[in-house]
Length: 350
Ligand code: P6P
Image (cartoon, rainbow, N blue to C red):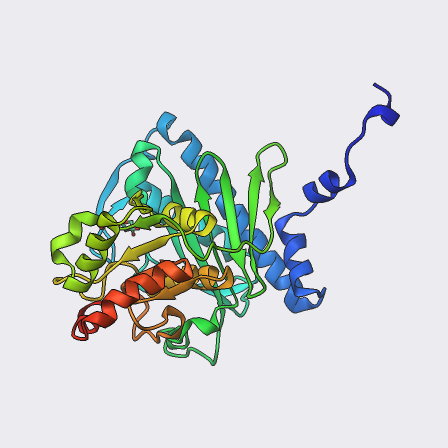
């Protein structure tokens, strides 16, 4: 076939050239040093995603990749070998980047400070390196969640107290979903955009811009095994969706996949507080706040019950919040049950 017959629509080439780093610069509408830094930062996150995706795709054929390490993390959770590997990937990818000064991770008690002998930037990466790692050994979807904040002040005591601020301090946030395809979804406050990893290019290529979550969806995503530990208000909501047509339960046990379904198809994800854990299970700084940023930018809502997630100020790095997030109408339906029983808000919304 001669070249004249090879008709490649303009957009497909341009689209294949819309990599993550180029898209960030387009979103910022700038080529300033700050914009270049953020573009480079997102590119490093993409590199971490590629390294983790590669490991996951080979995990079943390699020694020492699957299973538990035998240790527990700061959360009191058993650590999977993949948790450790993924955490190390982010450290390795950012250590020599000159872009960050600290890395705060679900897997580390204290933030990791970039060593003096490495170039130090002024951003902080907060991340959950592998969320849903219980799915790793059974080849079900898992994800990485990230948020970028700027260091404020000197942090002289090494306690990273400047991170203990509300979600409006997030400059960028998003997640990487390791599924049949590896998908990176991010926002910098100008919409939510998704990229698919094209293995043949080794690049994340733009798939969707300005994703909008439907105002209503049929899915409610919650671990109903905790039913009798919830407050009456949440139990009454669950009874409602059981008894009314048009609702269906979907729950994978891995936050990123459950949230991605809600983002794309609508519905609501809940991880309410329980009698023994009124604060819930999910961590604010590197799980619920980044996801709340994404969901709100897509036109949805994200609350801990009756308090907006992005307004919550944590008192420690690994602070937990209950979470109700997703389509506007679905979240408001859950909240209508919370408001029916005032003393509920003490348990669910703390
Ligand atoms: P449960 C995984 O451990 C995780 O942090 C999230 O990915 C997930 O949404 C949640 O916990 C699952 O918790 O109690 O339902 O097993």
